[in-house]
Length: 113
Length: 113
Image (cartoon, rainbow over all chains, first blue to last red; front, side, top):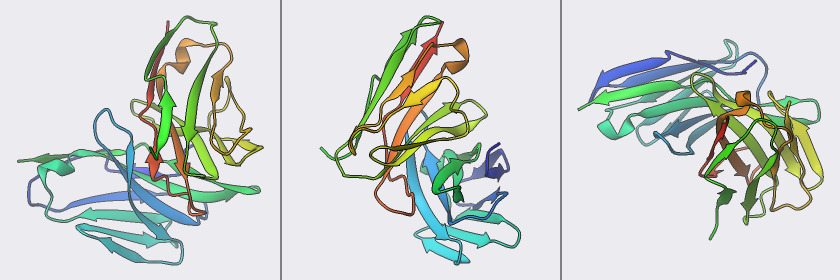
């Protein structure tokens, strides 16, 4: 089963509003990452937060991590139409000798102009 | 040109045929991985490698085979194609222990009829 589960599955907002997306996971992690995918394209890495960090910022992105609740949130402030895409959380966790990166099912964000 | 080169971009196979999806990177990345993406399922890890000569299974390895004889190449083999393997396949690589997949291939859209 997949490690990360995003919530909600789909989100539609007006340009200028903030978008909040959540991710929950099941096992201990080394880090958690968020990716964006535009239609028909590969994934683009947005931000990484380590297990010993609680909050990180990158431009209009703010990520939080609560390891006690095994959850993370991605906030996109002042959204733009160009933010329309699918967003995935991915967790890097050790399984046996190696760590591997597993993705959630994704959140479809639509930003209306 | 730096990046992940993934070929072919499109492929149609008949049930039972075999084929190899090629993935190559010229950035000396240790970590390489293969994912399949299906509607509503997000990205699921098929196989991954933490270095030449080392491979491991992901979430959905059945029906696929990989090898990592060099750092640069990580081919994915479909042994006997089935309609359930119709999907979009992505190869990705990482240059850090953080498993940040900064580089994705362009994807292979595979249809098995």
